[in-house]
Image (cartoon, rainbow, N blue to C red; front, side, top):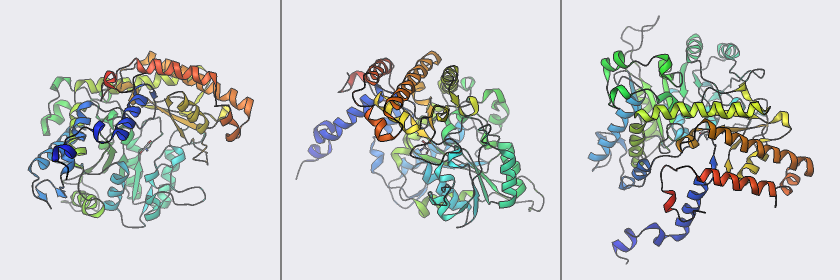
Length: 497
Ligand code: DSN
């Protein structure tokens, strides 16, 4: 048998050069490319250190203080710290809100929340996928094929954006909701460039007796961002926090879903800049007085949500993720995080304005958050072609449906987000340069399509040995490599050039 130090203490490069090498290639791809996927980010070295720690060894099914395994004293401390930091990050009073930090990621968090709040076949309404919603909000195709487990196990009726404006059509949503009488309305999306009117959602939910859940995954960093310099990053709970530090409207980088929703779910690796993980926040304590409700009514979400996460849907919590999330939440209440979130938004505006100045069409003609949705249909191009060409030039975007689209594989747009490159220190002028690169990429796409034809197999021929693509790739690499990279030292990479 090998010695412990031989199999257990040798570095990755010695144990598995193949995987080590692929990781080094991926580091080069990340550092020498322009990362514009709106749901991605670059996390910190401290978060990565916690993720790659001995915490991955431990089983801890159950909740802190009530586990099915021994040896959890430090794991309990970590999960409790993570929970209190999560509440502090969103300025929540722990008497009124609780949080479960065990979901493995966003889709499991959403399904656990639905499992807790709904019975099979209960009715739900979420933003339609082609309108910028998420699969887990109940998507099925226009032909009726149920794509998401949410639409398989629950009866889902989507609401949509107005085809004229690209904004959510709240009046239509209200009309549909009053007919459909859902038990749950879901707000939040994956490709919606505007802020959310949570007060209107609440009023619609109340009119039809529905619960209101926000999936704030994309904007969770913007919602967390607040000027905390007056507190030097300290965590302050309770009355004092609410009175002295209640954020003014101008102080927030996004409308606050906690003000109006019953439950809020999120991933933690998008604009929040943490590890891949998920959280479910829920109201607890006395319910506000309402006609027809007993005076002492209290919210009953806590036990249901904790039970849904474990034992109903998950096994052991991923403690390395939870510790890494605790680190990210600590970083999210530092004064620098507010500046980061502001810059994410300013960069999205700069990028959007540059593209519009070139005559391109953005959904809703702009952005109020971290992303723009570029409508390529007026150009006669599809998102898959632009995504592919950009990939060849080391620019990473993703094809995305634009309302009215029917094909997910050849949709009419691309989604472009600013969180990742802002984490590398880029500011408005850099994003104007990025928009110029995107303009060049689309120009190349159009000339290939003109020369070779619209069919994908013909278009693909124009990508081979294309001098314009090679030149753009070289310029993109030079540009991207000139910025710092969070998480790892570029100077220590195996593949630098
Ligand atoms: N898949 C993510 C996105 O790209 O928006 C959401 O979970």
